[in-house]
Image 1 (cartoon, rainbow, N blue to C red):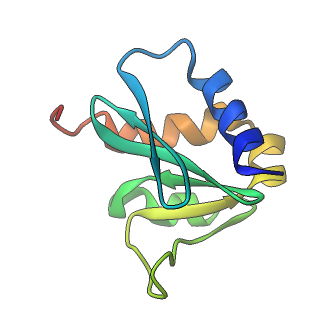
Image 2: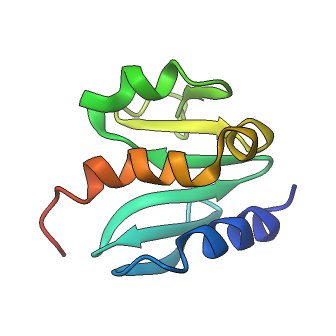
Length: 107
């Protein structure tokens, strides 16, 4: 799956939510909730910002892996295999990330 394809999947899943914007970042597209990074795209995977408190819950889900964009783990962020995320329901991953990001003050 290309970045654009995974971005279109996220756009569709996020269409009914308020406060969503998008920005090119990390070599793909990131989606922000009230100005705070929520999720993004990658080659054959998604990225979700779940926060450190929800990281263990996220990592227990199929297809999840630590985000290591710079060669070291970025706490509170996870990569999720695109097929696994779609099988589990992309909205459930967005809901998990929104639990954390939605509690942050708007930027």
